[in-house]
Image (cartoon, rainbow, N blue to C red; front, side, top):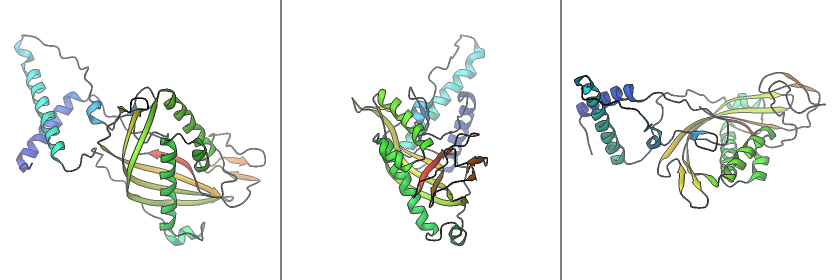
Length: 287
């Protein structure tokens, strides 16, 4: 179905005016948890990927026979028309993809030369493959309640957070299904070495299907299995190639940590990785 430029402009104008009156607020995406999409449910997170369930049906419209209420009726009718037209446009599009923010994320790769100062045996492209595979393996472990796999792929701090969330999800007969991942962009944005602890920062732009089902009925209870979610991630991966002792700085807050007596930062609570010979996920945040 094709629309003229004027029709598209008129639809956009009505939509903007209607949203100004009817949408009370827009929630920003927060994260670091196993939930990649924001879930609004009994599971303790907010879900706002499914636009169809995001509109509040509890608006109070105060009707009256007075002529002063006529403009309100006009706005209501206009809003209904806008919603119907938007649904028609979305259904006529070739790909039912969730709309995302138009704000760009301008992250750049470090150079191979800069990387080799810290990791001489890898290129930036090879490191991208390694970190993206870890991301996929963590998602698979999360979806299948594989605690042992999560423990091997994450720092202790992140593992403990994920385990708590998964136990709550399992008690409520829920399962977070994620599939058909498409990596749209990936950048290695930084690398550092703190007394043998190598820290790699990444940015990833990924599309996927992401929803929650009831394991007893297989019914979708959050999200939409027919809609694609587009998430932008900031992730940190860490590893060490030697036994770390003595004093070092926390890679998260910069505080001094005595590794002879503790492997956890007393200021921010981050776990300091001492024995991860391969890269593990330390942080994951949706932006």
